[in-house]
Length: 389
Image 1 (cartoon, rainbow, N blue to C red):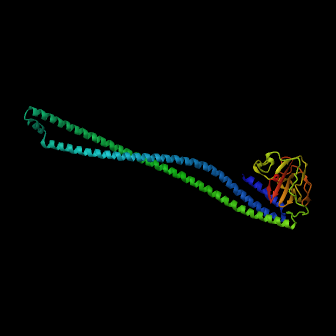
Image 2: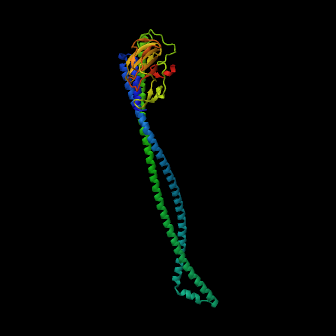
Image 3: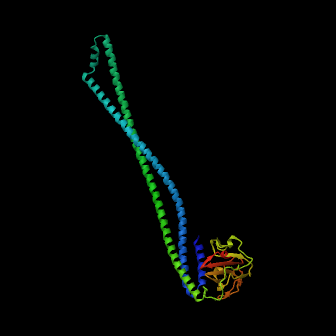
């Protein structure tokens, strides 16, 4: 509902209330009521606009939630990778410790071998061979010498291989550590992004909740103010009714209220289209949706309009968008309105009976063609007229 729609409906009710009570006494109250309802409508308009904004924000929040879910998935993956890297580092460190111990053992062995050769010199090997007892012993000692030499070469090669393994293990550990650092940095960036999105979400929600709360407070305050003013209006109407012997307008009290069987205002003409009935509709002139406070019946201009029941004419004159309009007080808090008339057959203060002609169909005021707009008020509020027939 737009601000224009809200205000338009309120103004119609305020104008009617202004008609129903004495202008001298009600002018200030109707002005206050119109001002209060205007403020209420303006605040409600802001609430509606903010709710539209909230709808858009909620869409963006939905996207943010999807992104947060994606980031959480990335974080879970990174955590799993970090756990794997840490396990690999621990395993590699164990392997490195073993390789370091083996290297130390091999270095000690080679050091002992070199120390022995140094102490006995190069001739020791020849002396070892020439001390053989016989040829068989000599061959055996040659084979042993060859084994010792090959063993020395194997130890040297094993030591070189072990050092190579150690270097590779150290390089792998360093690479894994660098990768771990990179993954941790990526995790921190993802967490920062998540926190930023969460902060934006909280900020947007808080801002719009504050706006809605602010205008809801205004609506509530003005609604209470309007209710107070309307109560004063009803008290004035009741006082006037008591003073006039039952009429809520100060008109003649000589009529007898109808017994519940009412006269249809334009016999032979009835609402046809959906837009002719009571309720929300697209306004044929203003092009927006608003409440239609009555029923419409298309009839030729000049068609007589009959009083719904016995009553007192409380208004017969121009009534803004309703054009030429007659309002009849039927008693017991019930009034009948006839709008857009071409001419009047009664005047204010006149007493009428059910079926009397009160005016003629026309197209005055906000109208697109000859028709009767027929409204019924109960307790000061418009109700569906078809409920009385």
